[in-house]
Image (cartoon, rainbow, N blue to C red; front, side, top):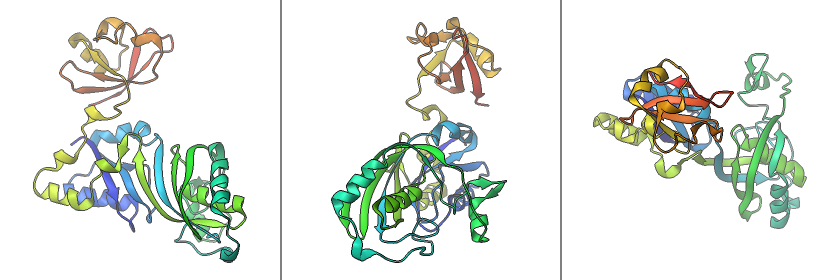
Length: 303
């Protein structure tokens, strides 16, 4: 079974817990996830079945959209509501809505963001959260991220409802912590829900209960997005029948190996990535233009 499940992750479990549940429900071991969500977060979680996991570098690396609530007034050691307070409550000196809105605007754009000390980022091969729990010093290197939008959606002090659109790898917990620093009152993430991951939205997501019911009825494939429909924004190239063997062997594909209207423009270098298909519509894999731009080189071939 190869394809993608768009799951609405429930609160209170890790992303890996969800993978274990799906494996159990499907009786299928080749299950993985991309775009990890914290235990207290909910929303869109990509679950790969079979060979779909090979597409994760391109699926989970796309932009995300979140909605949630930030509590102003004090910080925590985890940067969210599950942590211990690390400052005193300053609710009496909270900023106005206009001040919050302006501070959020200043956090938009490309920046170097320091991940939370309680995160899965590795330090000398060990997850940072394990060092933090052992009360050892955690010093994480900043990561370049882009926050396209960070908007205030509602304000009932000390709670600020927000929506954020950001690049893959952005820690919304750090965004909340940085907002508190900018406002001078401290802040932490109260609630978080991922609503979009690349082209996949909550409208496509299903619950674990729905997966369980579908599996029991033998209708799980109705919930699975097949490999052929992954990366829908990536250009599709159909090969002539004689080129199928070349693609499966990873051999370069020349213009004469390509059918359809993209043939003439194929090697123009416009796109960095192509999906390659058999004439029947079956996905063969992914390819990139060669360095000289005179061929396509398959690099991920579906077995």
